[in-house]
Length: 61
Image 1 (cartoon, helix red, strand yellow):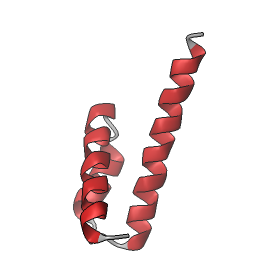
Image 2 (cartoon, one colour):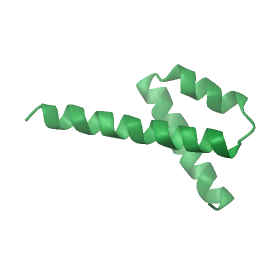
Image 3 (cartoon, helix red, strand yellow):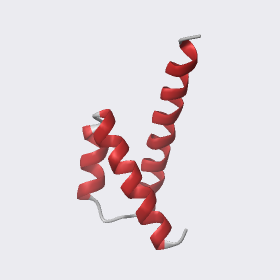
Image 4 (cartoon, one colour):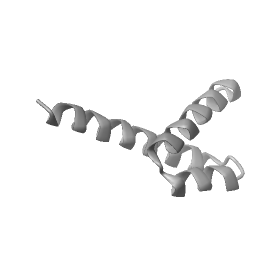
């Protein structure tokens, strides 16, 4: 993945963590050295949050 694209993705993920109060993953992002495992873990967490929001949305119907 291109560095600029990854930076934008990480910025978006950090904002999502702040909005959802996911302090543990946000702190992990702040303290790490941008390794591949951290990126994959953060992307996984982000999609987990996305799926959680979808479930909440559809549970209203």
